[in-house]
Amino acid sequence: MNNRYLKFYLNYIKKYKKRFITAIIFMFLYAILNASIIFVVKMVIDDIFVKAQLISEGKAINKNPINLKTFFNKGTKIINDKAKMNEPVKIESKEAIKYIVHSLIIISIIFILVYLIKGIFWYIRKYMMFYIGERVVMDLRNKIYGHIQDLSIAFFDKVKTGEIMSRITNDVIYIQRAISGAGTQVIQEPLNLIFALAILFYLNWQITSFSLIIIIILIIPVSILSKKMKKATKVSQVKIADLSSIMQEIINGARVVKAFNMEEHEKDKFKQINREYFNAMMKGNRAWALLTPTNEFLSSLAIAAAIIIGGLLIIQGKMTTGSFFAYFFALFSVYRPTRTLTEAYATYKKSHPVVDRINEVINEHISIKEIENPVKIKDFKNKIIFKNLWFSYNHKDWVLQNIDLTVRKGQNIAIVGESGGGKSTIGALLLRFYDSDKGTIIIDGRDIKNYSVRDLRSIIGYVSQEPFLFNDTIYNNIAYGNMNVKKDAIIEAAKASNSYDFIEQLPQGFDTIVGERGYSLSGGQRQRIAIARALIKNPHILILDEATSALDSESEKIVQDALEILMKGRTNIIIAHRLSTIKNSDIIFVLSKGNIIETGTHNDLLAKKGKYFHLYNII
View 1 (cartoon, helix red, strand yellow):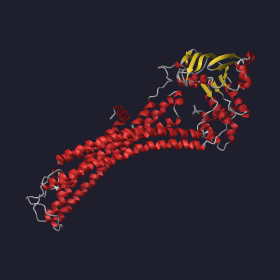
View 2 (tube, helix red, strand yellow; view 1 turned 180 degrees about the vertical axis):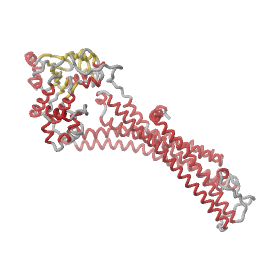
View 3 (cartoon, one colour; view 1 turned 90 degrees about the horizontal axis):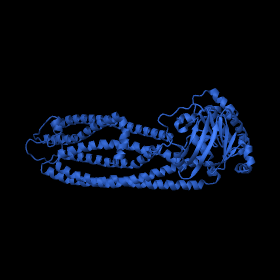
View 4 (spheres, helix red, strand yellow; view 1 turned 60 degrees about the horizontal axis):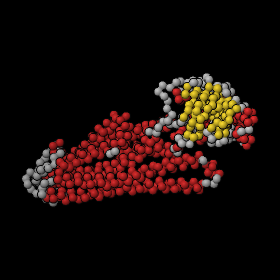
């Protein structure tokens, strides 16, 4: 076994070591009782039916009482004299019948008790392993989701949403199967195998030695088929992640798909990926399906040889009939755990690609890190300085170059420019969604990297062009980020954002569920809810990222009125495409291809007849 994967499982299982040890103890006890059934078979044949037949024939036998010594005796001498056993005859002797009935009652009671206790042991060890498996899955999901929450926006820029969802939901199921199913088998079946082999050697070491050769041969096809299953699993997990991504995109982009009549195209794309997933799964399933018949065929060779050798030993008087049947019962007890172990090993191997995919997320570098003892920041007192700021999303093509600008407390500054010029990136860097490649952002004399990320974001409000609403009530969407806020404050924020009237007209008012991404509301309504949410946060610094550019004229006027209320008494950074919304800004920075090329007031920039003048006249 690969130590890297084994360490992965042990690292999560050790948290529940008490339950794991309990499961192992009951697996051990279960294996002992399971092995004892073999001697029950021998006793039923040798000590009951054969003896009863001899009693019926009037022959002298050893009427030893049932005890541990006779129970585990491999070569009980049935007949006192050296008479040969005759052909089976009908048992009519009352003494023989009485002996059979008495013995069968005792054996039946023992048999029932053994299986009752076995069942209890089975339940306890199975429950413990299920518990561990489900808890490990829960821990893994929490760890993956928690780690994802700590990753920067850069991670979400490069990884598909469906891919992330697949690793949290689909991938961890393989881990649960490996622990609850294969994990149980990997411990239980070797115990069963050890006890069964011990009995086989005890009953007849010659046949057992031959049988072991077959068991060793079984390893070869198992290893080959397991590699094929591992490869198929790796491909199938990638394809199921692709399916999740496609479904997520289609659900979110349903309007675009229908508007462009692309339903059939999307169906064909989904069918193609689904077919590739099917093909990958079937490659693995073919290998899986070959495991059992391969094992059984090789096992049949050993069994066939054992039948011949055992028969010869009975003829030679070196093995009793009961021992012969007990041996075969034990032999089947060996091959069952051997087969189960090969399947468990295959399951374990199938989980390897999943472990790799999970580790990819867990080991993803957290690029936005706090220093060891970050400085607390509760408010904004003086100014923000963007100093010699350079940034690239791919560490190759510069989005921002040598940005120098200052925002003083209480100022309204605007950043304008053509689409893709890097305007929104400045706001993202201030919020530390990303960190700059070169240069610094300073708030009140300190690099923002010295502040607690949580504290920094708590003093900054953010309203984007496309506000994101959760599939929750309007009330909870407004309160998001401050869930303990009082209802009166929610109502006041709704009124100030021009949201209250339309909310009250909804059937459930503030308790109305807005649907996924808030699509049950209009664009203007969603934007006003986002403004109300920002009002509840009551930030010192406000970033408005194209907050009205996606709205019609009527909605823009309503939202603009709400924004003016939101902006009062704050330091505002307005990222704008519609230049009519930033005429009254204290300073306007014109950005082009990542560089600030013009700075001034609205009138000053128009007078220069430069880039701003050009943008103002064409937009």
